[in-house]
Image (cartoon, rainbow, N blue to C red; front, side):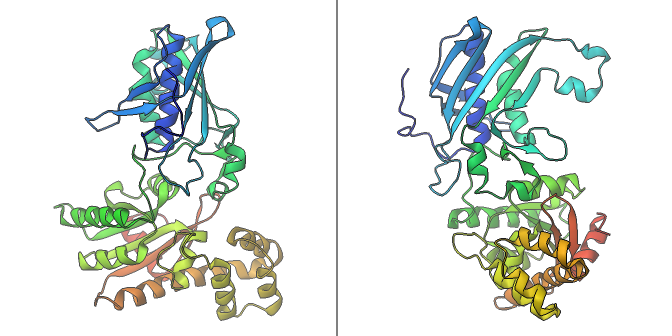
Length: 391
């Protein structure tokens, strides 16, 4: 089966789906089945399957190994993974782990050994592949039943262009190094800057607020990294709403839906835009982060030499590292100013459209995925949510 990977009509799926399709194709070929260029992929908590295209698959190493190739098609022209080549190499190896004697965590992953090949991002703290729980569930649902008893699947994923493409992302800001992460919480791509995505998120917000268990608290997180970190820090999943870049309209919708306390939780290099009055945060529409940082440094009363140093860096993260190194006495003051300005600016934005007493707090995390700075309201909301605030 020969296909043109750029002419396929299957579009709009997240990176983990394309990885799993290639891995499934390679595993089937390894087990002796003929290559299928269309893979039926099961989706967690979804009765419908998806048909995903795979470019090629073949046996290697005298039949002890198989490789398959797919091409990511998110349907987004500005997505760095659009058209990206994906290699998956699989081998079957005999189990050496006695599952009955193993602990729960070992048992859960005993059927799979996932290796981050070239271009696949790893966590700088552990060296483990950066893989979302949804991506693992996809692998488990589609591959585990194929593995013969007594064996485990050794799966290596390679993104040939991953290291170069990662330079155009904020992965390193979230502690992911050497390539692209395999993350996602659903099969279909959500366009964070599209009106449809805004409409869908507002509908989800309103449904949350109408639920009988809704207690009036809501947490906005931007993107997969923020969502993953929020769960690890102990935020209740029922209170978390993963949002895109339309933060302004979503905050107004929250106020209209009688949300009492709203926490904005995100990477400092993203949410700083709100401090400058930019409430659609997609970089392709507006990016004045360094200008906002410079203005806030002036308001905070930093000395001229520090402000001039900020003007010479090329990113928010670089500014933070520079200040930590050269002017550590001003770092905490400046970033607390940012958090408080985000809260103030957000209240001002909402008041343009609707009278509201909704409390808005801010909690910011850094490139190492540590929650570092909170506004005055943010500290109070964290206490109300039972989450430990930064020291």
